[in-house]
Image 1 (cartoon, each protein chain N blue to C red):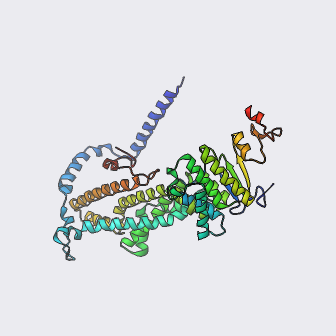
Image 2 (image 1 turned 90 degrees about the vertical axis):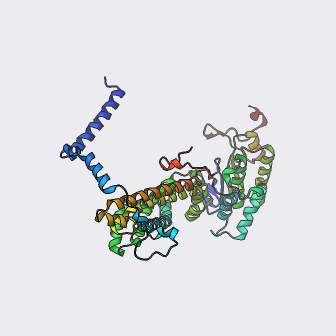
Image 3 (image 1 turned 45 degrees about the vertical axis):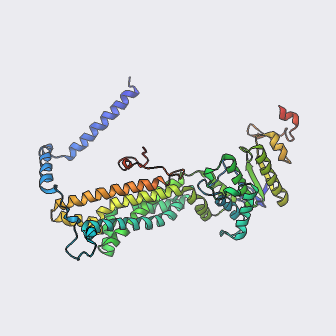
Length: 169
Length: 292
């Protein structure tokens, strides 16, 4: 299997893989800006913060609607806001592949739509791949081109396309 | 039948018996204890009490030029105590600057086994000798005075603080590290961007604790000539002027209490949530986390 031009299980190149873990992996004692800068920095080749990198970070924060809290420590944010910071970090990174684990949970309906729209827009514009782990099948259907159902730890080969009827079941 | 309760009782009384058996082996004549209380009372009344507070009066030479109200600043107690605090401060700052990068390498969740064990070996070596033994070495190397004390306490600080730091780093949540690695950030970037901000509160708290520890231990390194108030204590011990020695000890006790209190107050600013919680003065006598 090839990911970002590398054969798995080789380590992907710097900044190519964006990861939004279920438990977010944020630096809780640092600000939103600091966390998003980590992503923006991973997406650039240098370890020094250039103005372009900062601009990317600001833009990603703005897309997630967190501009007014930019210097707020992450630990003081609500669960949904923290999830948006993790998504902003990945958007600022501009990766080729995004692995997102339940990245829409804890969000209210309106915010969820906004986050999903921004992520899908990034995916469409950049041509990146997005792999999402989602327990809500209806929500997964609304964003996915392909759907794999993992049942009891294995991919169920018989449920590739989930129909409305199966969702009801 | 041997129940768990009987096993615990057996273990308890067995340990007590073993302890007294070892003690008995080290005491050649128990009768020596009989006069000890009388000796203590005589020593206290004739040599220790009342304390000789001339140690907080200005020295005859050099002539004190301070304003009369502040002439205690020319006393040996003040000069020695301030020197001890200075030694502790400089050693803590230098030690923490050296120990932080070392602890980053020593932390198993950040580096390979080989690099980690190598640094742990160095840190263990630095703290295996107490600071007073390091002070003897450095007095031989650089001569008498506070510089030897600073070097000795810096080495000890590196060993002790390094261990506290790498253990704290190893205890940190692994998910931010995993995420940073998956993004492709370098080890240096992870250390600066993830580990230090995430662990800042405990790293600062440990450094403040180390300063407090160094002040307490800095009082004895002067005994071997490495500067500080210990130098004067040693001087008066040699002349058997115990009433002056007790004055120094009382001053040390008060200063250590004050520094402990400042340390607890300062560390409370750097708790897990980073919010100010008012420390209680009696926390000095108990756990650093004790609250009202």
